[in-house]
Length: 494
Image 1 (cartoon, one colour):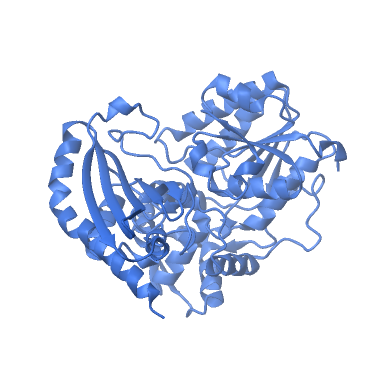
Image 2 (cartoon, rainbow, N blue to C red):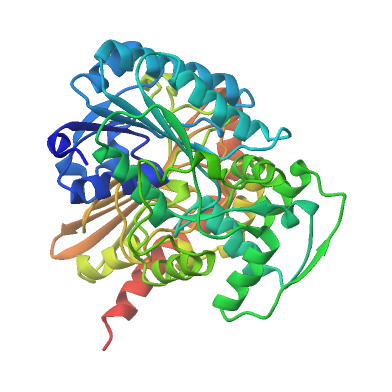
């Protein structure tokens, strides 16, 4: 291993995502100097490591932003993808990777490390084909590229694990497509991070493709049965049917699990191909297997369930941003793009101390729900999922604490000041841009809870939408505020 790299600068792209967020922490634990490149720095401000890294904010499609991000970098981790952005995600990913490769060459960095997907089937999915093409574009210049190709990643909070967990939990009897019998070689997120971190300590730059997988080859059906056994559930009855196409399968998964259809489809398409590591592409020559070995499928599932039960999930699949409808204003749009702000404002004056009210506000959503009108929230989430949105079942990372950037059902935490202010940004499909805000302040020795639902409509359609749903606001928002106060008062009792 190269001790000269100890204080070299390592760039991580996709640091607000599932793998990237965890890789930052692992490299910092190894005393590495880390820079991250993100579109929106606000999303990572709540991370425990946010003050320990250099943050470059920019767009991966902008050459000047890339030049700033790559300046002085030794090794760059490429963890970007666009599978949720467009039906043309393959072209978008290739162009983005080519731009990154050229910028890396201009900056004269030493190494690119790319996490791709195992693809050893001629009938591979669009998603896996795009992952391969991304690797090809990254390797199109003189900069050495180490491409680590993984299959299904099992870890607390990963999309693959959440899909497996919810399918197994909710369906004791299930009809499934034939792909559940295809062979796959899962790998634990712990071991993926081991390989990525080891790439930072290579003796010399490497230009090769390496498949990384766990020690077992199983079918998806076997994984579901193992999950059921470890979770204390009865053996699942699995009936295979030939009529479930990838599109139908993704719709079915989107209905049963929190994983939205836009993400479920590329995951399903990947499972249609056999995903098994090629021994000829082993990483052993440059990165030895961990001294305690790679985790088995059962060990990886058990560890993921333990982390979930302990509420120690650092990153989740939902940490990455999801696309909005084409008419929905993006967070980066100029202020004038919305022009009009519509508001539902409620105030509740109480003698309950701020501390107890804040505990209820910060615990909102997830299993606790939204303090009343549960069927209306469920209905709105169901409509959102039918339209291709994330729905209300993403839940929350921690049942008691929030941080900026956390996903919270179909919201995302945009601002968080303990015992003062919480602002949630809506990621549901909307003809505009929406927030839900809570503010706490002291007035004449009492506590004032201010609750605001804000909406910036996109054109006439957005305004019509607001007035159509306004009658429901008469049930939802007054009830929410009153129940927050009631729950806070109840929490004060011994």
